[in-house]
Image (cartoon, rainbow, N blue to C red):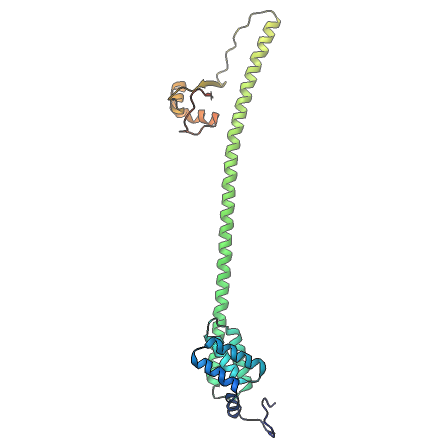
Length: 243
C-alpha cells in the first residue's frame, strides 16, 4: 500500500525520496532547529504535534522516539512504539540498523524498569510487614504490662479480702462472747495476716523490711503489697501493709 502520494504518481516512491520530502516540511524543519538549539523538551513536543497531524510522517516519529528515549523523563514504551512505526513506514531505510539497535536498547530499558518496579514493590511490602510486626510487638508489650498490673491488683484484692475475713472472725467471736455474757479476750491474728506500719521520716522499703523481717530483700514484697516501686520515696505518716 502506498503511504505517501504525489500528484500523478502511480508507483510507490522510494524511502529516500519520501524522507527527502518530509525533511523539507516547514513544521519538521522548525522542530529540527529546536532540537539543534538544545530545546529538547520543546522539540519533543513539536514532533509529537507533527505526528498527530501527520501519522505517517516517519522521520518525525524517528526524531520523537529518540527524544522520548534519551531526554528525561524518558518513556521507553512510547519510544519503542514509534521506532517500530518508523520501520513499518520506512522498511528500506538506511537508518534501519540504527533503529533496530535503538529498539533493543528500549526493550532493555523497559525490562530494567520492570525489574526495578518489582524490587520496589517487594521492598515496600517488606517495610509494611516490618511496621506491622512492630505494631504487634508494641501491642503485645502493652498487654503484658496490663496483665502484670492486673496480677498486682488481684494480689492486693486477695490480701484485703483475707484481712476482711480475719476481722469478721474477730467481730463474730466478740459478738458471740458478749451474747453469752463472757469476757472478751483478744484473738491473736494468724501469722499470715497483714499488718500495718506507719511510715517514719527517713524510712525506706529496704529499712522497713530489715526492721520487720530481718531481711531487707523482702522490701519487694512490701512494695508489691502497697503498689510502691522499689526506690520510690515514702510519705511520712502513711500507713502501709506489711504482708
